[in-house]
Image (cartoon, rainbow, N blue to C red):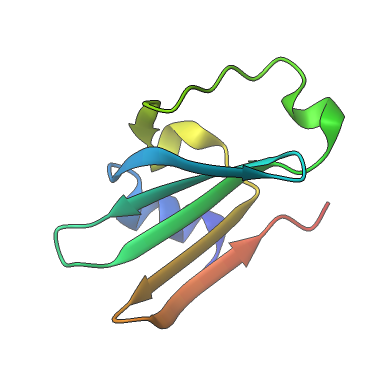
Length: 85
C-alpha cells in the first residue's frame, strides 16, 4: 500500500503519542478490527524543532503527516510505508 491508500483506509483512526527516540515521535492507534498502527513523525532535529507534543496528545492518522507507517494485526505486518526523503 502507498501512503494515500493507507490514509484513505485508516485515516480516521485515533492515534495517541507513544514514544520519542532520536528526533522521532511515534504514535500508536488501534482500529476497530484490531489492527495496530504505528506512525512516526520527525527524524531530524529540524523536522521537530517546533513540534509540540505532550503525553496525552491524541490525533487522527490523517492529521499526523507521518514519514513512516506500519500496520499489523496479531503481530503480523499488513503494510508499511516510509518516506523516500
